[in-house]
Image (tube, rainbow, N blue to C red; front, side, top):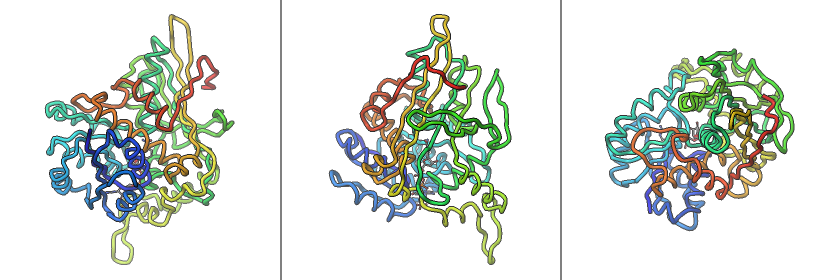
Length: 397
Ligand code: NDP
């Protein structure tokens, strides 16, 4: 039915490719292209029911991408490289008449400031070319936007308060490791907190606002207010929101290591001279930290990510908590990956599947909540990320 080109061969890509191969009736031809081809070859070698093609590509180089895409002629490119590559890949898609999907919004390499403005600026060009771009189709962003759209339509006349809660209650048995690309992860967590309230964005010092929240099947975990990219699009798409916040759990060990990394300057994103060569400390740090894709083997526990929403239905205040719990062990058993890669890789596959089935297809550049949430919710239930719903429960927030 459709040809897909996946860029990147890290932890998330590994899951997406495995899940696409399980949906081989839709994904009839798959190519994985990345900077280090041996990593794509390793992913391809893990698939037995269909042949996966691989290629080497520098996704910062639009010319290289165009040459590859003109040869393979994909229907959609699924960008599972890093946020720095979003624009060069979108440029290549426009040049080749190919649709696009990603899981993280663009961020310039030299400035830790991600926002949708850069990618939303492509809307007219994608629309005129009749191409679809689906932005932020992982779990958060991704499923959290779909949950919000689903709940807003099904349970509310007006949603007013949204809290996205992301708990990783797993243990990888390493002193310090990040669950996805360390450079992107540390850049995200060390920035100032930000949330939306009464029509304006309010800033907080990094990780300065926190409280214990109860997660189903897990119990209380200290949760930290952070800025997260889906807040930007959800506030725009749901103007009735009076407040929108994002919370993520961190253990004390993680925070202690993070503080040391910051104190000694290893989170710096500007180049420093070392032995006559320029190195970027955070990139060097990535090279010595555990590869997130390798954490799965000893990972125990589970993640719990969801949306806690309060609003009005028939004039009455009502609440809804929609969430998924994902076991690290079960994710590893199925795909060889831990739950953070799994919860990102599965929704990326679902978004591409719905595109190829013409269900999530409309010219322009869109966030996930711009599409019909129901077919996505059905796929989540069937593809390993079932939702749970609690209505009129105490949201704690
Ligand atoms: P990894 O670091 O494991 O993998 C990234 C891959 O991209 C690697 O194969 C890397 O190649 C490749 N790559 C990097 N730069 C280039 C380039 N210039 N050209 C070609 N390939 C390149 O990351 P993850 O798999 O953990 O994460 C993938 C994406 O998913 C990230 O953008 C991350 O932000 C996003 N994400 C989204 C989440 C969500 O819920 N929405 C949650 C978690 C992650 P090499 O191996 O050679 O370095």
